[in-house]
Structure formats: C-alpha cells, structure tokens
Amino acid sequence: MLSLPISVLVSGIDSIKVLRENLKTACDFQPMSADEMNTLRRRVGPMAADGRFELFKTSKYYDGPLGRHQHGFPGLEELET
Image 1 (cartoon, rainbow, N blue to C red):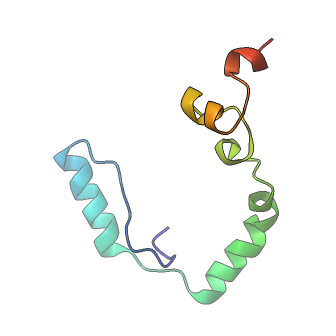
Image 2: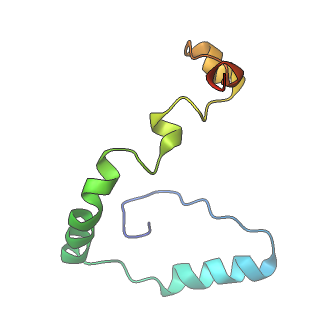
C-alpha cells in the first residue's frame, strides 16, 4: 500500500505496542521499484479486475438496510427466501 501514491493511510492501533510496530514499518519502508510494481500488477490484474474479492463493491449482500433501500435493493430477508 505504501508504494502507491497515497496521502493518508489509516491503520488500526489498539495499543502502544501496535503503534510502535506501525511506526517501525513506516520508518523502515522501502517502496517497490516501477518494475516491481508492474510485475505485481501483471500478476494480480486478472483477479483484481472482476471484483471476486470485493463483494461489498460488486454484490447486493453488503449494504446496510438504509443503503439497500436508497438504491432500490431488496432487503436481506427477501434475498434469503
């Protein structure tokens, strides 16, 4: 993630120990080279393109009741019958 051009990274921190681990990771981080990034993109591209691992983006099963209603999706109870 840090090899991508981002302005903010939100990481889970539930203790001082985790904060220190996250800071160490950020301080020691070495970004991937352009060649490494291109190799990674070629390797994962086919799997990333169809949404199979991001069902919350590609299916109706992950919206809450309000969002489902706003988008005209049936309620989860209707889908389960």
